[in-house]
Image (cartoon, one colour):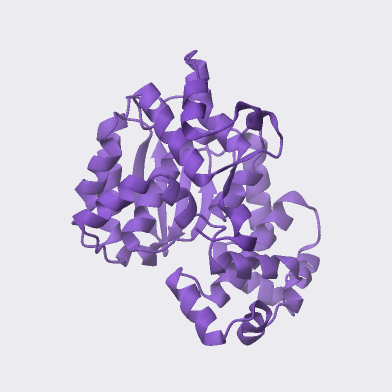
Length: 345
């Protein structure tokens, strides 16, 4: 367990705890024993800035699943009986690559819970997992729980964090707000969408699966706390690099050697550690520029040329080329599309 400046990143916000407890409260079940078993003081839940450790949250997650006899907390059309996640892990263990493993996991989940029904599609370099439903929209936490299970398993199978490009939620934004969701996934998060989507680069589907039965047992023994920490967006060296980039205007971003100097590590060490976490400095800078561009276009009326300048592009034409690479749309078309979608919800 890391210490020092990394400690806060190992915490789970109280809003996430309250969302997890809601299915028990809806069934008039006593949450006190579950909280006590997880070592969570009830008064912590009333603090706006309250937090629990990942281990506490993991114990809470298991306690709720046991109380409900449902590893998906009652969000599926059918109960996900205890032991189902273990069986999914065993079902995908001998998959040759991540794509085969994900398709197997999605089929297994559909057999268990019926809905939501996950489907993997690949188009134009992007892999998209869509959750199909015939019922009314579920809570944001219901979709988040699905993504945590699926994405966490995929990351473990690949042996690295799989950065996401986009996360859409069919349900409304949670009462506690969407900030924690955006921080957790580290990608543009949109609520009230026509369908729930998880989007990432299709190249990751080719990653080999090379895990043993013994490794699976250890992974399951520590789940879900290990999923919440090991593969979350805001842990590791990539979080330190991103924090530095977020502190500065893009025009002032240092080159790779300059970033290594800021972090007081040799460039070779920084490159090796980023590679181990599935990141590159260039990809991170591009991702942050992209996310800032999306936010500015949707939430402000600023001129596109001004947005381009703020993002460090020497010319608006360079911004247009980069934006078309990200979305296959112009900035103006993206702004119109997103605002039209929001107005129709």
